[in-house]
Image 1 (cartoon, rainbow, N blue to C red):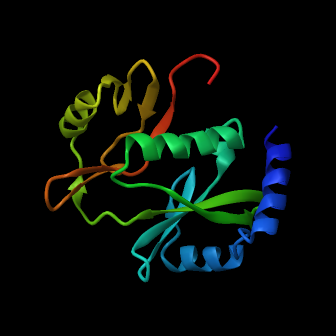
Image 2: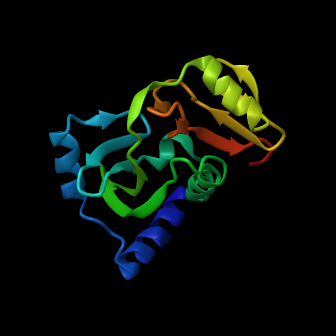
Length: 169
């Protein structure tokens, strides 16, 4: 399914002018120390004040649709650090979405008790470690690297693993 979706998305990206320069992303990412993890390669753009992320959809998602739903859920439930799709690049023989997020100037990563208080205020309960849920969503991976605290003490959820909680999602 992902292959057919990727082919359709590639055709769309080309037609809409959204196929970005993958070599440029790669060069910038390498120059900044190849930051990121299993899911995203990231770099910072000083000009725009945004963090750019190249995503490997197959790491966390069964389909492109699930990836886009996750982006939508992030923006709905964590608007303090919204995601914006910038386009797509070819990387390692696969199509990868590229999205940006405002840079959060953080004083530190959030402590678990702060994250737990934030999530409880939003109607979630902690299930284990850094994972939370309610009747609608599962939100995982809310460790100090993915929830940041700014100078005003505000928490910013920047990289949750967020999925519908109902079967078949």
